[in-house]
Amino acid sequence: MKKIKAKFAKLIYLIKKSLYFAWHRHHFLIPPSAMKKYIKSFIKILRRGGTSSNLIDNQKCYQEWLEKNNNHIEIKKFSYNPLLSVIIPVYNVKREYLVECLESILKQSYLNFEIILIDDNSSNIETLNTLKEYENNSKIKIKYRKTNGMISVASNDGIKLAKGEFLVLVDNDDKLDQNAFYYLVEALNKDKTLDFIYTDEDKMDIHGKYFEPHFKPDYSPDTLMGMNYICHLSCLRTSLVREVGGFRKEYDGSQDYDLFLRILDKTKKIYHVPRILYHWRETPNSTSLALGNKSYAYLAGKRALEDTLKRRNIKGEVLDNPTSSTYLVKYKHDNPKVSIIIPMKDKVNLTKVCIDSLYKKNTYQNFEIIIVDNNSTEEETFAYFTNLKKEHDNVKILTIKEEFNYSRLNNLAIKETTGDYILLLNNDTEVLDKDFLDYMVGYASRDHVGCVGLKLLYKDLKVQHAGVVLGYGGVAGHVFVTASNKDIGIFNRLSMPYDYSAVTAACLLVKKSKYLEVDGFDENLKVALNDVDFNLKMLKKGYYNVCLNNISLLHYESKSRGYEVTKEQMDRFQKEQDYMKKKWGKELENDKYFSSNYF
Image (cartoon, rainbow, N blue to C red):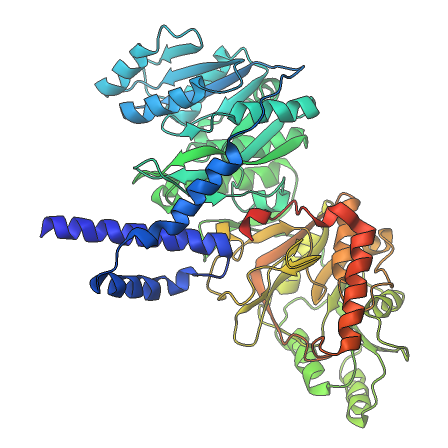
């Protein structure tokens, strides 16, 4: 019976891992909310005589992908070959794990490195004997601490011994790709001024199999304020680490997060190598398995963020995320006036729901509404305008009798605004979260932020928008469409603020001065892709666009104008796609904030 139970437990483990990867690989294939249903169906198949081999096809697929993409490269000679100091704190680790870790480093294709092992007073004889085996290796230095100081103190001891220009941080039970250092140094040969390099990573189970790849975005400051997405593999300029004082013991558990945040106070010369070069070992008590396994790590991370706000003189509050083990930063502001621009044509019932929700469900009250009436003809519409102006003194009606051109409508409306911030809002939306505008203004007030969006939901509460990705479905597309609002998404993308290349103008907040700085919307794009173009212009100016996926808004999409179904509409859409491709070229092919490996 025990053997049967053990096999059954292993089977469930394989099923969950396989489905988890499928969800992460295809966004919508098997969301966590449907996991139980699929597990039950797989069990039924097995009871009918099926095998478990097909349950791990996705994992096998990833193994094959990893082999194909990370190996078989041409090793080139570099003109710049900096010494890398690999810092590895060691404490009571299994021999097999430590050996696998060290051998993966010693077999690197780039050879100018040193390994600094700091034993933090291990009591495990197996660990100590393993360290002795490597004492005579010329590339390895070993320091034996006489007391247990925990990870920050041990790591700082290693930093003191480091002779390298750069530090590489590695855990004592993890594993590196054989070309990890090669790619780090390749980046430095392209730009010697880089201070901070990080790579993609995956997880490694107890059998040495790889799963759950984390294809990370390029540097994303707002994402980083929600969680330590950088993690492994990280390479930092030694002088800069020493300048900020190395690791801080009071942040053990999230000591690397705290260090990264302090390093980024000093430099923005950070680079992402989009390759899986680090394998994070999953163990029962590992933070790689779940941050919740170490609540002290979560609390340390929160303190690190609170200290960061204080250190940077930023007014804000770090909140616990109720849906995931991440953080929410709510930035404070001086309650600036927001001008809400709502284009419409008749369909008063729809517009009324939108505007009523702004007054009744929204706690942020310093706003004005500019309704852009584009060729309305129904008496009901004009009667509504009259009543609305009687009820509220902060409503303007701007009548534009021209053919529909979304870009032009907004550009003309901007001239009528008196607010410092502009909220572009579709009339087929409805407020769900009362503090949505408060959150959005907080982010939009940050100097580095351009456009701010949020998660939009269909009437059935399935996701309609949670960020726009370049190259997805053509020029650009929405990811996570039809996912459940309860799903947290790949690496929490549906539950916290994330930097994206673009957010939809169905609900987009931007500082007015920044709107004018990029010359508003391109009026050549009358209907489609004008918001993508607007976001790209923000990126070009050096701003970041952020989607607040912890906040939701209802969007009865396309009820105002309908879908693109006629030949004329389809032809126009194709022309606008062609226009975007000509205008932006290769910039549309590689999204910096969402890896194409996910689609």
